[in-house]
Structure formats: structure tokens, C-alpha cells
Length: 149
Image (tube, rainbow, N blue to C red; front, top):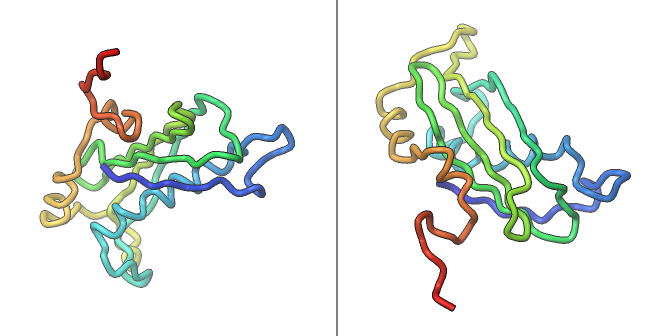
């Protein structure tokens, strides 16, 4: 799993004083950078191998301007031509949003989807997680018990 920590900007707040709902898809795209680097290290645009086919975001709690947000990101499904990336955003030890993105392996010159190459599939498989793992609180191991009081 990959983790990205962001500091919300004042410009990302809305009239109600919390982070606007339109910000999360942008944050989640930024959090996919580690997966992009994994499968396409050069990050060049002329031979970019993916296209975004679907996103969704669930808003769990209001997110505030004054505290960092940590986003857990992982590959949670690998298909023949697509992969699903799951995100969980945390602020002040609370899950504030979660989302998914479906990326399709794509040939922009031919304008067609393609099978994910075997070497890329192997890289992605090394980072395959389940959604429960993605939603784990940052810094807390799943299955870990609190220290006795």
C-alpha cells in the first residue's frame, strides 16, 4: 500500500468552511502517482498506457482546512485490461472519504483498450491489497491490539 500526506489549502475550502467535495477526486488522482510511477516510470505523456474509466467517492465525515490528510492507496483488483485502485482518506484519526478508480490499459494511437502486459501485471500483483487493508488507519497495523492500560 502507498501513503500520501497532503496539507489542505485554504482555497480548497467551501462556503461552509470544510474541504469542498470536488477536491477529493483531485487528491485521489495525486495519490495514484506511486502506482503511475510503478507501471510507467518515465511518466511521459506520449506513451502513457492508461485511461481513467470510472471514479467514485464516498464522503464519510467533513474534512477541515487545518489538519493534514493521509491517503492510503492500493491496487485492489486486476482484470484482463483494467485495474481498480482504492483510496481511503484520513484526518485526525478518522476516515473522512474513500473512493475507487478504474484504470484501463489503453493504446492512445489505436484508441483501443489492451491487455495489461504480463510484466506490469506482476508488478501490480505485488501491491494487491483488499479494501479492508486500504481503509486501515494510517500507522495502525491490522489485527494489532492496543497496549494494555
